[in-house]
Amino acid sequence: MKICLKLGCLIISFVIILLTSCNKEESKTETTNDTTITTKAVVQIIVENLSGVVQTKVNVDMFDKEISNYQTSTIIKSETTNSSGIATFDLESMVTNSPKTFYFGVFQQNGNSYELIGSKKVEGVKKGVEISTNLVLIN
Image 1 (cartoon, helix red, strand yellow):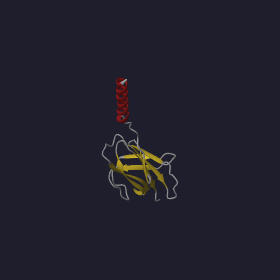
Image 2 (image 1 turned 180 degrees about the vertical axis):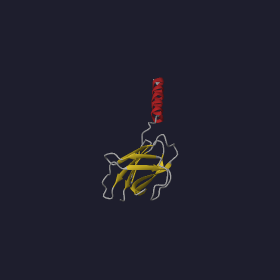
Image 3 (image 1 turned 135 degrees about the horizontal axis):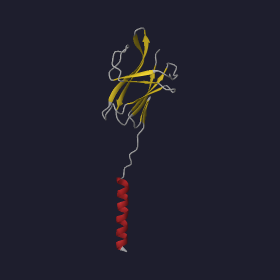
């Protein structure tokens, strides 16, 4: 009887240790004002006008340096908004585990130059992160 009791306690202890040491990794989702972070290396730029209406077929350019009123920096990547007004940038091959900052801009041709009509600075871009944020056009 004592052997069965000791064996039972040993088995229960083993099961408790086994269950508490198992750790299931789950994807985290964190939401702040206009940014949602999940588990992919993606930045989604939602382009809207001043009235909040999403804009389709708009070219959104990505830069690794701050952008000014006129397009002077080198474009790293460019995407066009879909029918929901979203330009999706898959950056998995471009980022590491260290957070980076990218700048996104929409330009309108004005004669021989391009004028900035909307921009967004996005910080914390790294592997395992998906960021979705709004870019409002001023024109």
